[in-house]
Length: 381
Image (tube, rainbow, N blue to C red):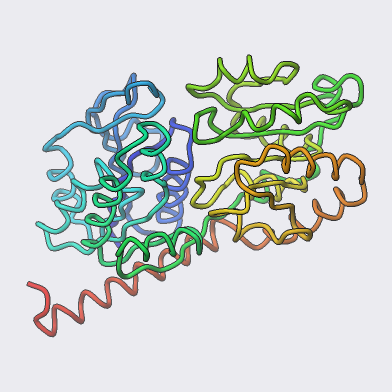
């Protein structure tokens, strides 16, 4: 099968859309298919074909940094997308979090008569509310238009599927995310790293993710001030400077990736996620795979990942006092921390990227079969 993956982000970008697009392309290649990736060029990329990093073509289109958030690139209009789709002779177009480049990818797929699967991954409406204070309705109109044109929309969680349905998006199915349980594992807990982070033997509470307004990391201020606790913040973004001021005493480690990130995860005593706009929340899975008890808002993606009191703790979104109480509860009970950590690990052990990738191939097969049936019946030109 020849699949064109049109994604709003791709490595070296570090975010959920980028990582999922990478895992999708890798799985397709491993299964003997022929993926091609179209993505915005980064700050130092030229819009050239595969640089040899990946065993499949990666085509970059010109882009500009998002004002106020230069880590996010916005694709510019380019004829390169349509020409690349035509040359690849794609059997199916995979749209990863379509909003700018993905909208153009959907239009090109329609012109070429190629079926498209649209993967909903980013709460763009919530981002518009957070960053602009307006525009949420316009964002949802754009989301609805592109997803309604797709043959199938894949939602990462039941909450995301419900949001899509409430906004009039048709043909929705669930497609979760995998986690690398070989990379993220409890055995990587590192006493030396822990001594460096908490030389006084403090309980290490960590946040991992983008440092941006929608992540609400400032809710951890009371935790940073809790006696016997050392707050560790991993990540980067436009809120970094403000958070350093708001969280005195916290250790900011900047970006961490790969084996280094896995070692940090496993060395935490508690993981806390604070953002209320997660359509899935991959870092919760990575903490669970690392055997670390998790605390997250009872909204969006975490509702599918955490069974409250069994595989983690859920708290009301935006409630710093509830976050503090949950951390204090775990600080007082090593046994509860151990129980939640073990149960969290058990919950994700079978949720590999290989399994999730095969589920995606099932969706592809169904979409192609449905398109063939419609063509045979004369319902598609």
